[in-house]
Image (cartoon, rainbow, N blue to C red):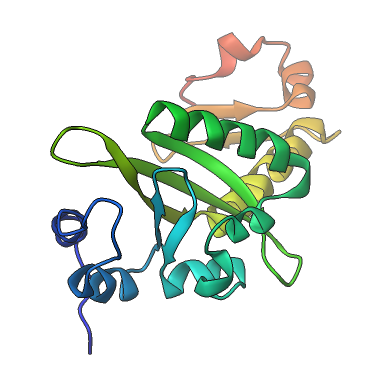
Length: 193
């Protein structure tokens, strides 16, 4: 059974990357067993390596993501803005940490948190990037479901009150406010036990 690499292991392996050169066997071994998507680019932002997990997340083979192939995974309505941002990040050697929406090759929507870090040579010149993509698809689906349930509770014609484990009101919908004749500020935090 292979142990999952730690972030420290991955950071150490990034240190073995030769600026502008191919990935090292130690980096590829660690990135290949990582539970997150990992990629490496050259200084122009063209993908030179993608690990198998990134392939699973996107439904594309790691080889098909090389060069600019990864751009096909970006959600179509976001593609132009993401690519413009990408060019800006690369031109300025920026670190990036943002939410990205992409489309799996089967057409299903996915969300990921991308973290992009510059790889600098000894003279502090940009030689490329190493990036990590954390799959947030399930968390995004949970968030949307929670928002939908919250909207339903707020709009119900019946009065709804939610209390925490100490008996304090933490939510009331509009119907309950009308029934009690209190404002939300007066009801929230009230102890009813």
